Length: 199
Image (cartoon, rainbow, N blue to C red):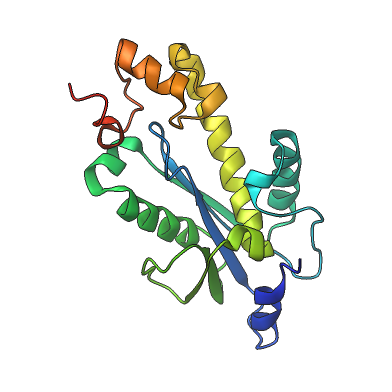
């Protein structure tokens, strides 16, 4: 599998500052949505980069450190569970991606985005399964996943009863059972739990 097809296409036209952007946390019942944007050098490819979900937690941590070290620019942004409830998850992802790209210290020539076209306000190509099909998006996917997982592990210390360190806020049976039993905490997205927590 060649995951540099998109990068080479733009490099051939002189667009060498290629940003990849991806989000993590669209589906969980608790916690923020997190987006990472990275611009990677095209002449120093990191072996093993792929969709973050296909990697072990240990390997993601290792790769994230290398990605952040080698990146020309790297930016992470998060939108809180409260704001997700206020503006809906699609708008939250759009804001999150936009701010992550705007936060880059170097302006990209083009942005490769994982998923469907959501109308981001810059020159972008949207790639289905982009975290697997594009090296640069894969790098962003790993950085975002590690950042959010670590964040939810920290939140688990504040709210130990929910087990955030295990499921990272996703809707596992154990997580849903716990919400039903003791109710939500401040990290829970009220619009995501209304089907089983209507109080």
